[in-house]
Image (cartoon, rainbow, N blue to C red; front, side, top):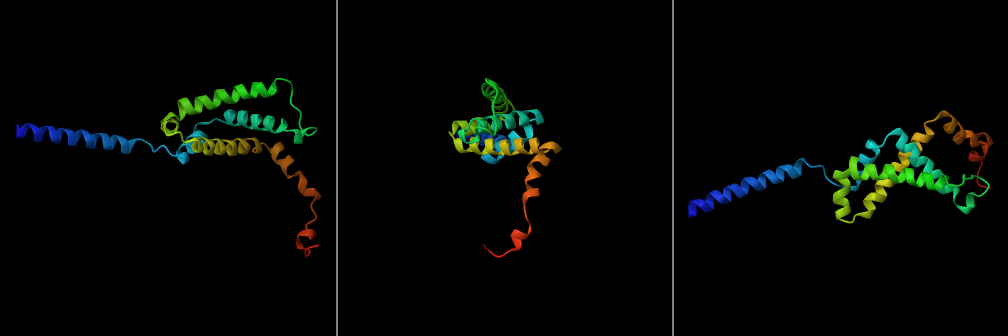
Length: 152
């Protein structure tokens, strides 16, 4: 009987060590890991989809009236596109990171991931020379001497 208990104990120890090794091999589900996965697994087109959606959301703000207009139905179309891309990224491409975070109800991890994806979307958009040139156009109205003058 004692010999059986020792053998069973050794088998349990071996199984536990195997499980621990498998856990060590599994990627850690952290907000940073999810963010990295989202940015690595998103394509250039995915990022442009997010960038367009962000611009449409900004155009929806009353403060942007007269600055940006949105074609009827365009925001809904972009909402659907972003939902499709986001679902693929979370449920398929980065599932090993997102599922444990969902189980832990770690909403801040998804906010962090969304922010990282938003940064990548803007970088993708601004990598276009026309967009970069438009962002820099304000500089022609700056008087560098005002930076050197003592406070007014």
